Image 1 (tube, chains in turn yellow, purple):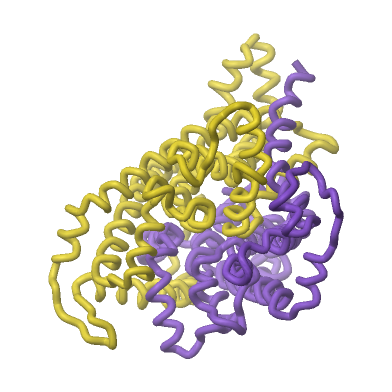
Image 2 (cartoon, chains in turn cyan, red):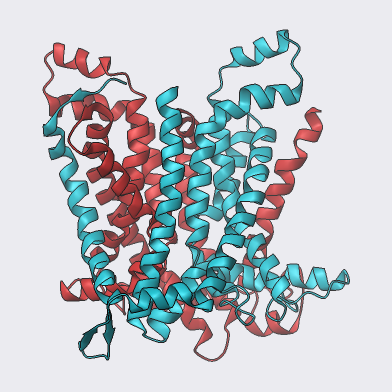
Length: 288
Length: 266
């Protein structure tokens, strides 16, 4: 759309700007402030320069949790995107099945995150949980509180359960916006099912899929509550993701300086990744 | 082919419903039964867990608190985002692109980063442990999202609508409320749904910003582990009840979801 130049439009943006700035600027500056200082409690601070940043960037603990975080996010995207698209493609397009599918599939999205964690905890417990009990009676040696492999498996399964629906809803919306004329044309041309997917559906879903990738990347990279309740980062440090490690450091050990430095590095990584996605997305929008 | 198609969504829905069923199943059992007997349905059906929640004010006030700040937040986010999204969709102005990206960066900020500074900040402005504090803090990620979604919907409305209205002698406020808002009603519905959703499910900030008065239900739940061991039955009942408001909201917006998703950005 061709937009008119109008500086007065700023007046419309002021409420949003004020509300977000109120929440973002002051707390963020507090974090920046801490990251350069050492605190001994009761508001005694000492300037430390970039010491914390250097320490964090060289600490093995940070490397380990960052690595775990990237692996987790990567696996999540790898499973949820194809699965979400597949479900959206096979979902009914009209009739009574549509509201049922939409309502039931949206359910996991609206459950508070710690309830999701708690729910999966009692669902996966090896003795009293349905998943744990079934797997064990099938002959698998499954115990997510003891074995790190099982903890990973459970955390990933939980996230797939929790968030795949978002990808489904987005892809479904993208599919719904395709005019029937495209399909008719494809039929006349004798296109195969795969051709229809590759040349009609996938390009039309590009926009919503970029959004899905962006949202899923951000949220899985910031995941905190669910693994905190499910595994608490354990066993050992097996599922100790970035956010969990950060909160342990900030609120558990009260190492404000290092925690603040880690926060900033963490935030910058997310920001950088999102900037890349965002520019790719906007470039596409400009072309079409 | 037609029949095979049903298999994938059906299995997916079964997979989604299993943990929810297990939670419901446990909520109708006593804690002793949960620990001692493994069964697919309650052997000794009881409503005691729910009775405890509905008679103890520390429990049910948690629900009231959660609903209160969620509704506050939805109202604040959407009413602030409406004019801003209009500006972004219709006008070019100094720094518009940067502002838009800056807004989005706040959606990307890990709440864990903000937990501690928020605690200190809201304590210093005397808002600690109030509903409005949580509602305001959730604006951090809900307003950017609301602006983003609404902007998508508004850009889909042709500009000719605005111009025709002005030619017909409508003033801006009259046009905005009488014509424009009804036109994008579906978009507003979807936006409210997302704001409600993200505010309802967030716990880290809500827990950090409250002590007793405004404590959300999700935070109250964590106490079942501290007093007298794990009261699993109670935990399951409380958890099951947190699913309800979401289910009600989905039921109301079910028609919008299908339609609204299709026309907007989300």
